[in-house]
Image 1 (cartoon, rainbow, N blue to C red):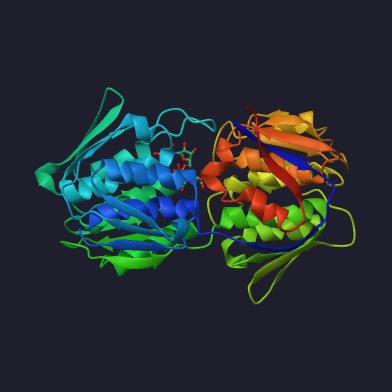
Image 2 (tube, rainbow, N blue to C red):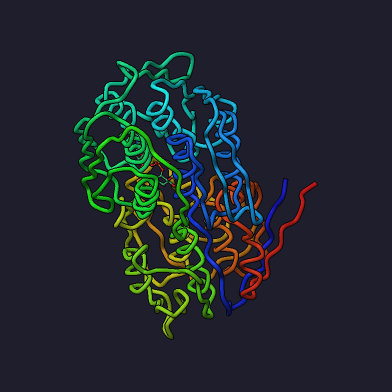
Length: 423
Ligand code: UD1
């Protein structure tokens, strides 16, 4: 297993290119199952989660070719489709559940393993299954697998009122509805940019769908979808993470491909802490203003609110701000597992349920720390950039799931960071 070693205290300067969004790509890839014509995805990120989804789709009979060093994915599902998604692959990544809607829409039945435990909370699938149930699917749980069957062999349109704006449920059911008989209306749909991206791709494939980016998405089912070529939207979470790098250790960095509209709530909080963000011709430029960092309160929320996927990284910044910040996690229970690790680096954090109170300490100190999930691990790297001395982050396989070339991207702006083998 590898670790990442960061030596803090180096101000950063230069440019970081931002990749295509992991979370968009993971929902665009299963859309291949909706058509027997080719789907080409440009600007794909090079990540282990993308390889896991490729493996899953291949196990279902799809063809997936990774071209141009992984930046282009050529997908095709023209042959016979296997409708069983095995636990062995699904357990590696919750987003595997995004094959359920497309398989059910195309074949009228599917057997998909439940993803199982996850470090950041229970993450059930009831919103997905209730919605598909409204569309005429009978779904039973047997031996850890969801066995789903569309009554009469084809899903039918329905009005679905989501109890919570679940990202995955909106994606799964929007995909399923493209081939259903009749009209589906999704109320309280998630509004994330990754959903807007999925809808654009589905439309390019011939889907009759509108309302993306609002709380109501309407889909008129069609008999078949065609092929498409689609460019994956910028990864707003990778963008926000690297915006925090010059914020936390000084300097100025330009994020190539960055867009404020992807991260407005996050940019407002950065502004309140004393970080300046400006638009450039190629993206966004971020630097710390003259004064020190100010404490701010942050509450995570579905888009357009502050993203839960940037909460851990923001906490790393607030550890060294002047004053006390309160972070409230409203999307996932148990998403403060980075806090004890930050405390090992000298942070002053008190966690009670979904609330973390962070008292700024001015200076963190390097320490050996352990990554517990994807966003937690990158928050420890950010903390390491600001800390005095050396920080060694173990279990970095979490990082490989969601950050391509993290060492290369941070070294090229002057960070002292390397990946070392523990064996
Ligand atoms: C997606 C993102 C993830 C992000 C999250 C919230 C992908 C691959 N992952 O995850 O990075 O952190 O959105 O922005 O896009 N829930 C239920 N029942 C369900 C579904 C969800 O109770 O059927 C709960 C979850 O346990 C969680 C909350 O709803 O507490 C949010 O989940 P959801 O929006 O579905 O997130 P994901 O799609 O899993």
